[in-house]
Image (cartoon, rainbow, N blue to C red; front, top):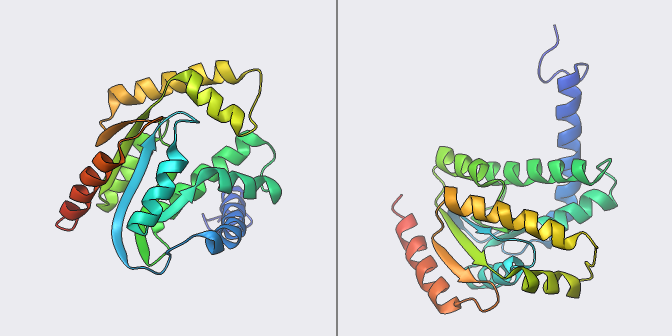
Length: 212
């Protein structure tokens, strides 16, 4: 009889391969992560925002100010592709998603204050489910940015694909749909974020999270 953990079963082989890929990603990623050994209770910070809206800029500021673990999705994708862990970009995106949410659910570091340096526009329900089932406090930041400004930022980063305008329209629709379905704790202008307001609201949420 084949069981879930049996490496001779199809499901067992898939689980084994996923775990093997996770180990490779972890080996490359974890040494680059700051503040792993600072003791902080669980608290998840995540973003709604299209590519080029300023997520990484704000994530880095919060990482330093609150001594949090910053998980950058672009860095994970880079590792996946360099180590040839995926057959194609779509497969790579799936592995990245499995890895990130497994990381959040299992909290492998002493520091459990995590910043997701990525958009959750399409994945907010998955993150909410993990947070609520594990009683993790969370803080959602919504970043508003004009499409032309987001495209300009992406161009400055060397992303100049002809389909970028088409993709931006798609990303913007996903952002708008997420805005209708899920509330955020604060909305900021991606071009000129009010950091003073952000720090004030976040400080209050961190304080109240102690009593959950």
